[in-house]
Length: 85
Image (cartoon, rainbow, N blue to C red; front, side, top):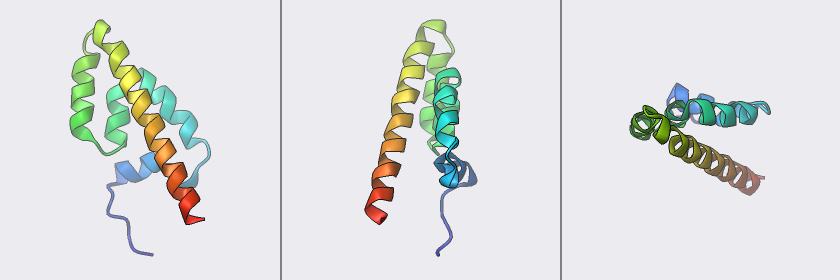
């Protein structure tokens, strides 16, 4: 197998086959939305999310956005895994 070009942070986000990884992603996306984007390997979106999170009024949209993005990544990974089977 070829080595992965993804950063160690992005590789840890993917879960590496760990079943409990998806249980951790959602609470992280709700409590620390910016960290969810950093763990996905998207630091610019993480900074934008942290600026939203800076105010209490912006925290809710940031949490919803991070949760939506987390779900999209999980769906994409499941569909790719199904194609490889």
